Amino acid sequence: MEPRPTIRLAAGVLAGLCLAPASASPATFSCPALNGAKPEAHLEYLQRERSTLSPDCISSAMDQLGLKHYAPAVKTLIAYLDYRLPDDPAKKRGIIIHIPTLGDTYPASTALFRIGKPATPNLVEAIANISTSDIARTNAIETLFVIHSGKLSELVTILNRASKESKDLKASDRLRDAAREITYRCQGPDIPTPMSGSTSTMTRESFAGPTRPPNNYLGVPTLGPPLALLWPLRNEPK
Image (tube, rainbow, N blue to C red; front, top):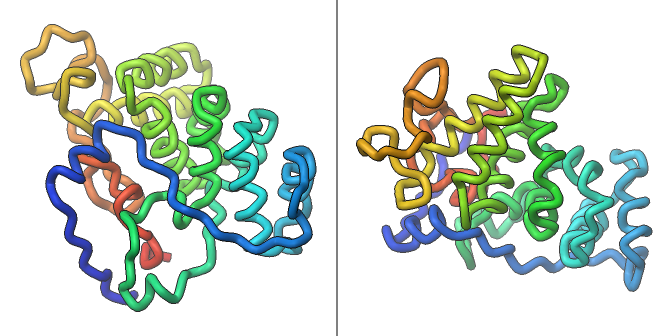
């Protein structure tokens, strides 16, 4: 595995990413076949056999569906949460022109972020579903994080409610773990730290199981801004 390039970010930038939604990165994709197409055509393209599709056209279709806030595409976009763009040669040379976001590597995340809260129920369902891959589940959590970054307590409530209502014990555990991760993600008036002594009901005692924050799929405890929002992820373990 190649060594990771070093990315230095100011503390203020990190704090901003923790408390505010990540901006979608500028996207430039060339797909003449979809130029001027309607959202229905972009969605139909993504629903074809994935192995036969062009990476540029996949990215272009997702980009347009997100820009159009096309909610009927949510389930299809969630199915693409583990779809990874081919490596950018510029990144391999260590050339970074903006703060890397999850969407730079997994474009479905950006599209879902743009669609916003209408994507929340299906993202929660994807987290609970046993057939969801680990990468897709992690990306679903990260996407929910930025969608609800203005009020993370709302997201924790949604995940906890879904966990309690689930009749599948393992699905319930997955949802509860996601809620626990979000509570440890940021410090601030919206989500107090479990050790802060706050009277908020969202404290360590709100959750069953280990009190240590869970690791993300990079194997690093999630004690700050989601690492997936800060890292290109091109060298993640295969």
